[in-house]
Structures are given as C-alpha cells and as structure tokens.
Image (tube, rainbow, N blue to C red; front, side, top):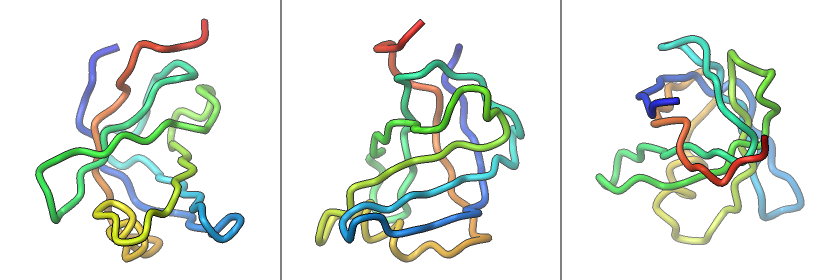
Length: 103
C-alpha cells in the first residue's frame, strides 16, 4: 500500500482520561483508505514542516474514516494544533505508513 496524501474533516473530538484526545477523521479526498492494523499516519501541522506520527486505532474495516488516540503534550506543536481544531475543520495527513503490522 503506497503512502498517499489524505484530506479529512474532524467529525469527533473527545478528551479521554484528562490527558488523551480521541479524534475521528472522516476522509474527503480520497474518501476511502486501506491499511493494516499497526500502521500509522503522518500528520501535517501548519506550524512546522515536520510530520507527527500517530497510530491508527480504528479497525481496518472502517475504510471511510480513521480514529486516533493522541496523548496531549503540554506546549507540543501537534498537541496545540489538535487542541485548536474544531469539528468540521480540515486535517491533512499521509497514510498508511509503517510496516510493523498484524496479518
């Protein structure tokens, strides 16, 4: 599976345990994804050209969206960005990445 650029809209954002954030990203372009359990995304953040890696926690059968569970790091660039994004706003990322997968 080649890594491709995806755009999505944030459809769900929930704090979990005071330190983690659950995010559901509904894919817009392309609107389907194929990945294996254990793969991750490379998140684009507007404040830096560096990408941030986040494991996909959704099941591979969910092909129109991805779910992430992100640890919020105080003063973290990606954490600050994800805290500021509201449902309905666009998030872009590259996926699927990584080969440490479960067959």
